[in-house]
Length: 602
Image 1 (tube, helix red, strand yellow):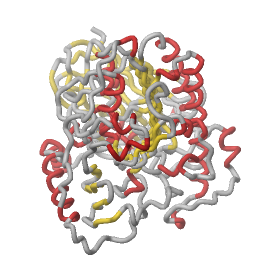
Image 2 (tube, helix red, strand yellow):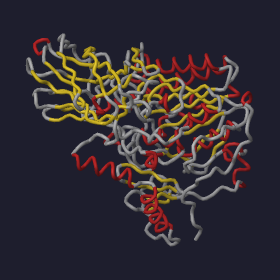
Image 3 (cartoon, rainbow, N blue to C red):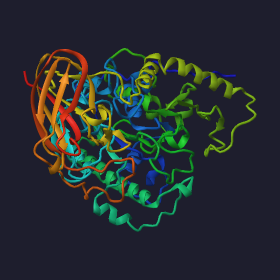
Image 4 (cartoon, helix red, strand yellow):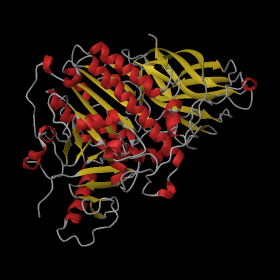
């Protein structure tokens, strides 16, 4: 029996080092929650994605390309070329989405090679410096760092660490910034990363896009049709068409600047579809380790070097993108941790007729989420229950292989055991154990505060720990806020590590009914105290202009939060619990709190 390669720790192909002036620029589009079946190129008859499809027509399709079941793990694997559990990422919120600080990213490498680097959209691998994208190799950042955002129209975002209020639809606004970045930097090589926020919910899309889908018949059904919500399918398709138009805007800019042929353009998604909708009949959706939950579209175009309309049949994954893009650009990798991904350059550059002659290893690609592990070979998948499926004869993953005469199932089960021991490391396991022991949902790693090079630290509700009567406004923490603060025994706590001793200015994003205004609050860390009053009253209605169709119950509706200037507090370097409490309550509740910001003044 031929043994399969367990992990690949070196690239198979190293491109010759290119002079800086001949290196290609790179544009990377990453969809959020788009399934393989959401594109007209892949057979969806309800949607039209001509700009995204053109990348396949003019470039290479990775036909069996696998990502993670959810968002932040895929991003970590793309950014590092390593399985996400190695990087410290094991969740999607409350700090669990952060990449360990000793990881080096693809942006670190391109930045070190002299590229201008920018990211525009959803980051989802850490908010506070040095987890912030501008500490991970990006010169410029515009978007939001959490995993899910509740405002898609006129959203509150950030630009290079400072809060901004964008105008219009969030995908259009982020694309505007990406195009501006390309315009300003096209005279030299650049890396432009555009992680879109759609079709992730909430279900919000510009009216011009929704008008085409509001009453449109959907002829292709999900593999579990009884679980499909047609309105959500329509909205997801409208979001994809809006996204496609924005991809087209970037491609047009590359053409206008006459750099399209010299630019590598990559498009993929971070997981399977976020609802039950048509996905080529594959089993599973977002959140599952089955084929439909982890197979993604992946198109890569480089007109100057890669063949057009070429399909790579060998399995590949998000872990392969870092070594592949560095190889194509002739850029040296930064960091020395072993890679799990392979350099796919030989497969991309080979004309279709020569593909079978490439000496390419048999390999396994592992998928893990929420304690489940599945492994894919070129021909088979072992699911998280240890069942073996022949993906060539049974692409719908519907019939377990019972008579495994070659012993492949046993080999893969053994490989999963090794993977768990090797990749699902003790450090990550200990983090989870500590959480359970504390009865907490927040990652136990401390939140860094107070770096002079990035003096503003944003502490959202999702990264804090409520106690007493306080709770979050929704089950999905990322875009939630604290509510039901009704007792002087209640506490809001952030576990922080103060990097620099100094004076910090404190601001709170809050709302409070007029009749409840005036409560006295106190912020403390160790022996340091800062007190203030919740004034003025500020009680705006919930937004009514955000949702095209109702958002899922677990996602919080938002409102306009007001800024409360609490004043300055002296904090000493070291770690501890940064705690907000009320010492006197004027009405029924203290306030609703979305975030606290600490800015190092001196």
